[in-house]
Length: 417
Image (tube, rainbow, N blue to C red; front, side):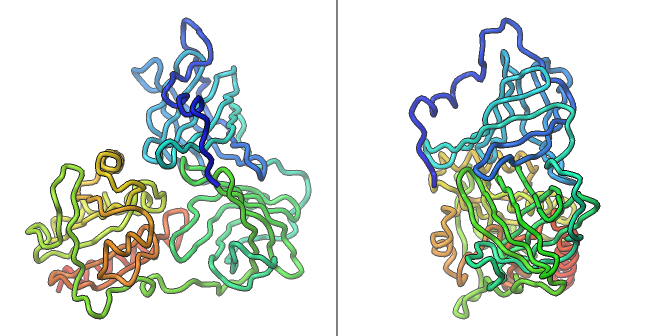
């Protein structure tokens, strides 16, 4: 449940991050840090790589490390005895006091208006492990696919609403969960005896998974701590054939609609519509997204450079952003920050709020907006040919590769028509 911080805590967001009156700023020891947030479920660990920024005596370049992911944070600065590591796209930041090889402070994230969420944060230089493990041998290898019920009330898998995909080497475990609306991005962790531990922090996603493994029944039962106060139990059973509903059948054009009719303003005030000349006789990809959505950012990280390579083939892209606020004065700058971060060349219009029911009303030609992101592919004649709900990002490995391959094959076919 979201809590409204006291006025003093809110005002802290606009104050300098200094914790003392030092005459010269402290310096951060460069290198790898083992960082963690203190959650209700215990330590939620992740990695940080902090390096001085060339030519800036107070600046640092910071990457968050989750398994194979090196996620760049925004330019970070030191003032007096503290470092501030922002992720402006998600209105999120780490702020910590520098204590030799240790950073101690807080992670905070603005939600709506003056609502702010926060968790204690700590990081230690030179440590590279994720979760502490004992000398207990793993009770089994968890590699493979697991039929999963997130939110299981019984400790059993009565309804498959996710598929866990894991890769275990020794006591190291990596993977993610696929769901009908997207994935849980890069999860990284360890196996200790019969216990599973996985975590992810990316400035927006804050996930801590724990579970017990029963090798006799090939099952997992545990808990998921999400964000500041979210919790749900989960269960999984090993199943190499575990699968999810076809993402091409969840969202569709209503039978009475012939095409997708949209007309929404860009941050500069210009209204963009699929009837505009730039889309005429071109294969067009409509991306339903939000700047607040990490899975949307994974898709954008693919789509933006892909568009640069392919736009000369008669291809266009239109982004429809559904943000937390319907006001352009609030959401317009967030859209522009997103465009700058991912070097987006195609237009992105503010289409409404990120409430799925409201998004569905904004796009009445669709049966519903089930997920952010959703990708709609339209042929040269304006006919909707394919709608893909959700997105399997690079953290899903072969599932991401499969999506990219199928996407390219379909676009090639439509371009040649």
